[in-house]
Image 1 (tube, rainbow, N blue to C red):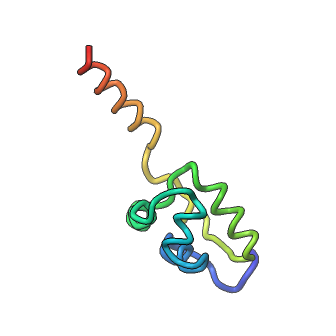
Image 2: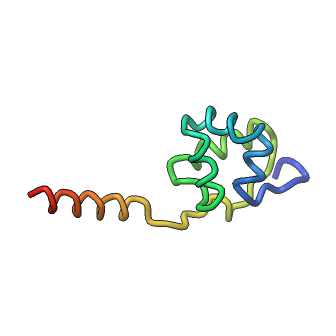
Length: 88
C-alpha cells in the first residue's frame, strides 16, 4: 500500500520503529512484553496503534500480522470465573 517493503512480523515492525525500548514506550508496555508479542503476535488492543504508526511512517503491514490468533477475552473471562469460584 505505502512502501516497497511489507512488514510481516512483529520483529520487523519493532525494528522499523526503532527497537524494543521505543516500541515499549510507544505502546505503553514493558520491553519484555514486546518480546512476548514477537512470539505470540500483537494483542488485539494494539492493532489500531500499529495501523496508525504504519500509516504515519508510510510502511505497509501485512493483514496476517494483525490477525487475532488467540481468544484474549474468552481466556480473561475464564480466568476471572476460575479465581472468583475459588474465592467463594
